[in-house]
Image 1 (tube, rainbow, N blue to C red):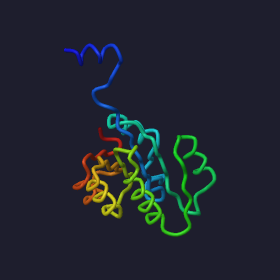
Image 2: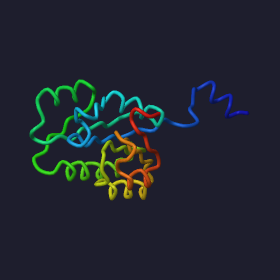
Image 3: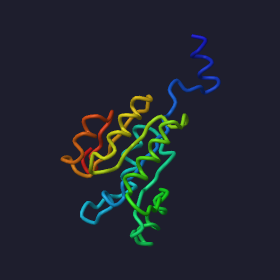
Image 4: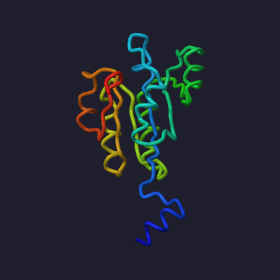
Length: 153
């Protein structure tokens, strides 16, 4: 009873909102034929917590217009020379050890990030996979704690 009174007086929360880091595989996801909206990505993560880190990985051929669109939707564009997946995997792995992040989300169509997903789970992170298509990234779908298929909720 005392806890309930203190909770009401001081506004203590019983469960804190989780902080999410989201990593978007730009060349694989931001394609005209998929019509992915980064706003929809953020909204779909809302039930799991708050996006604190949002990065979209792009190759050096990304247009200025695409980079601007990524920034305008509140994501940090990461321009790479070389394999985008390697840069994204390294950055995501580093985030596993960030104590202020409780959940890690991947937006991709392939299973290249399975080792990072497994490591994140091993270190107690909640894992989320956001897919553009139901049939993509079977290994990620079968390993992640949560799966979101955009357009199907």
